[in-house]
Image (cartoon, rainbow, N blue to C red; front, top):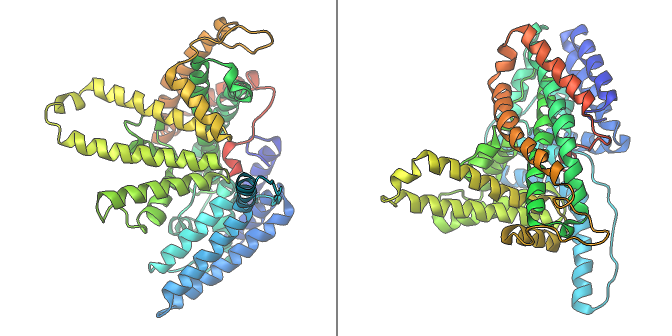
Amino acid sequence: MLFASFSYLIFLPAVVLLYWLVPQRFRLSLLLLASYFFYMSWNAGFVLLVIGMTAFNWFWGNLLHKQTSRRKTVFAIGLFVNLSCLALFKYSNLVIKSASDFTAVTTGHDPGWSINIILPLAISFFTFEFIHYLFEVYRGKSPISSYVLFSLFAAFFPTQIAGPIKRFPDFEAQMSEEKKIKLRYFDEGLPLIIMGLAKKVLLADNMAVLVNMVSKDPFSYGAPELWLTAYAFAFQIYFDFSGYTDIARGSAMLFGYKIPINFNMPYIARNVSDFWHRWHISLSSWLRDYLFIPLGGSRHGKWITHRNLFVTMVLGGLWHGASWNFVVWGAYHGLALIAHKEFSQWRSNCVLLEKFFCSSIWRCASVLMTFHVVCIGWVFFRIENIGQAFGIVKRMLVMSPLLTAVEVNQPILLWSNLPVIVPVSLILLAVLLLANIPLSLLLESGRIQKSPPIFQAVFCSLLIVAMITFLPTETEPFIYFRF
């Protein structure tokens, strides 16, 4: 059941109606059953995995809380079990395939080893939530006493498939309080859902048409076309994932639960570090709190800090998928963060250029450079073949060929479709200026919700009309459903 599907548009109102009709004491149980039903609509059998991991972590959290002398051992066992489940289902295929490829290269004989373990939906997200839970209990926080509430913490359907990654103290506090239905929940929730759908259907899915076309045969296109495709994918993944988050936030708000923002205008970041404070905030903060800081953070000198940054980003890349291109993508961002730290240190000691670094010209240039650094990284994220990804980046950076050569039966984008590409490029620029910044400001500042009801109604109605009018022929699944 996808957020952008007709079945979800029936499921959500039905659950919301029942939630506010039943007595308070039955609401959490109702949400839990609805969340399991939502998960089972994808694969009924794998709900047993979710239930099993939930039962283990609830029991283990209580056991960990009671320990006095063996806390570290009990915590390590809980961490090992969760990571083992994640590794078994998500990385077994990659390990076996890599071992087979390595054997073929070293011996000259391909053993053809392979397994086909199905990746359970959202296992990366709820595993990280379980690890966060055990970490916090180990650090002294009281575990969740209610099994139903703890089960809902992992299974809550608005955030179940692709986050944002929740923190249990906030979830427990909001879900435990007695709620009465308020018009404010709908005033804030419904516009978020409509705007999230618009981001997904109107923007992300239409940009996917160009991205998919070029990605099928990227070396048939010149450097300008590849840059245009990289820009398109940058906005596709942003509108796809932030659109999902808006729908999740809006859906949760209908039950009186407020999810923190997960994106904060990432493409106006002035450096790579700033980008990761704005992009997928729940994951970035999780990696900081439960990986970077436990590794030692920045407490042990420059080189140890660089090592911790690099390891954190590589593992963060691997978290995204069981493919080596995600490892390269993570390593690329790790190196970019290290380079930024070195540059920041040099800049702080460079008195001669101090005025320049404080000028508007430098601020604009830094935003532009950061955006292009991120776009190059998106190539490794999108293209699974690493050799092909490096070839694309090389072609983009050397700007060769500048125009696609005219060959028989060769797809030509700029050469034959120049009248189309120019408007598309202008639209992408308009998306950056008119949609990315103001729409994010409206969403994240709550200005849409604070505006007069007639404005909200007109704005949302126009978005619905636009979605119907410009609906692409094929709807793409949400990108982060794969992780």
